[in-house]
Each structure stands twice: as structure tokens, then as C-alpha cells.
Length: 91
Image 1 (tube, rainbow, N blue to C red):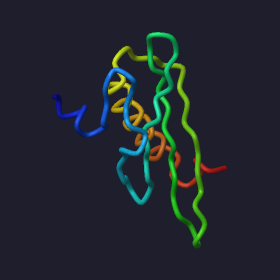
Image 2: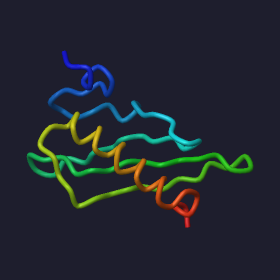
Image 3: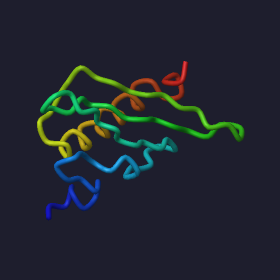
């Protein structure tokens, strides 16, 4: 089993939504969405601010055939968004 499959709990049915990572105080959870035989890049970005959990759903038009690769790409796109927007991602 590949490293990514172990990391994301992936199989042919798709990655495990519970697998994620923390990046610059943001919690990123990859949630690729099945779109026919492809997986659309999608992730939930969360951060706790003053005791409140703020959340943003990132959905891209990009699709990838492998669910584990889609999960990895979802995390990468979320990191890019965090780097570009920081806390403005929640506005």
C-alpha cells in the first residue's frame, strides 16, 4: 500500500475525509468530491478564533483521476490559499 493511501486512508472509494493536517494554525481536511470517474479538488479549511471555529470550503474545477492524488492536491491548493489570503479566507 502506498504512503498516500496509508496517510489518507484511500482506496478506490475515495480518501478518508478525517485525514488532514495543520498548516499555519489552520486545519486542512481534504474532501475530494467524486465527479464521474474523476475527483474534484475540495478541502475544508478551519481555524479557531476567539473560541469560535471558522470554516471555509475550497472547491476547484480541477479534477484528478486518483482519489489519493486528489486529496494531496486539495491540501496543496488549501495551503496556497492560506498563503495568499490568510484569515481573509473566511470573509
